[in-house]
Image 1 (cartoon, one colour):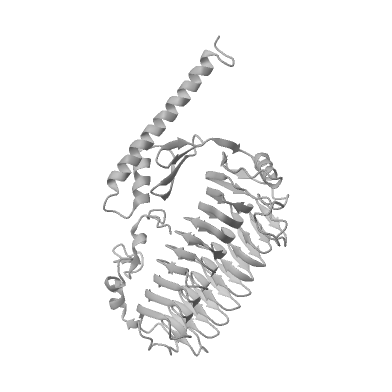
Image 2: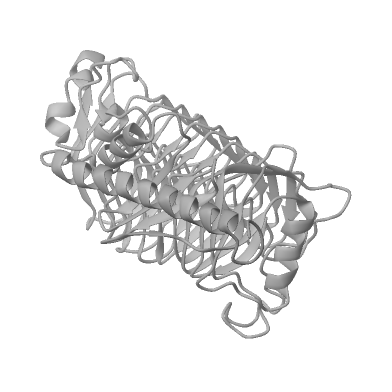
Length: 491
């Protein structure tokens, strides 16, 4: 019998599939073993892994996400297969493949009815266009925001979602309700390799983002892109509205973000979480306070690392920065970041990297964007500091404040004497009406001097041999071909 439940053709097909899986697994094993051998003496672990895997699968589209040396996820969009590398290589079992709008809505409805998909894998099998005449309800809802996200009345997505490098287009949200986005509320979830397209438009209340509204409890967004325009009353970002104990890694925002308070290109605010290897290319605008190119606010146990803002930023209120609006505790750090965008604040506390640091730290970062302020406390790196740490930074951007009483090439104003300021440099002649140039730990230099200052700045910086920053020092991770090629450094 050639067909049927136990037929020869069926068994032959199953054997072929098993052989192909075995072949993929064997080739992955060879690539990983080679990567371990070749990574000795380099800090570019993820770059070595990706190179080895892609060289073993030439001609195929392969997405390699290196979470760290102990966890690698490899996705093959042409076959819709996913492998995890965590001591051993295993093919992930796919619970659901979403191939059209109906599938996406079915998945959404199941989550919102209480099926969390914890421990399960969902993949996007094709690019999907959602008919925008129907307003989108997020995947995962937070109807009772007076409770903790984990409360039973709230419906969270807890699974693993792989977009396989594909795009969801046409998402339309127009509401004042809280926690809005393609996904609303996630709890311990992973969302990766997904783009929200430019024909999407999201307008929501508190905690609104393109990919996720509220990233909660060890949830991770990895290698995702937002192109949708985002509007919100408060706490909004291109990728997520806010993070509470979660991470956004290697993701990009191209969609304009407009809101009132706590607005960022990647996320609105971070509490007990991190943002790493992310870019904002979009213009951001706030009618209130706390606006940053990456995030508006770092609250506690939060950091931003290896990120860049290349969008214009404008705000009517205080605490405006190229990377963060404000860092609020000793456990908050910005490091190895740079700003290229024009920053304009109509009130106080405007900086190329941070608007204000309260006990927080900015290190190994630089600014090339123009910094403008109509109020007070305007700085090339930080607008105002209070018991903060600012070291190993430089600024070559123009700093202007026509009526500002406190303005400087690095720091606009230092509130307390307990601040640590060391090894900072800025370009001579680039500060209008400067009146804060006598801070210890801050040195003014000529253009040629700053181009050579990478030696003094330490291991995070290097010489701009490819002239990507007009000869001025660049961060070591910028030497890689793109932002994806740099070792993770989880804390």
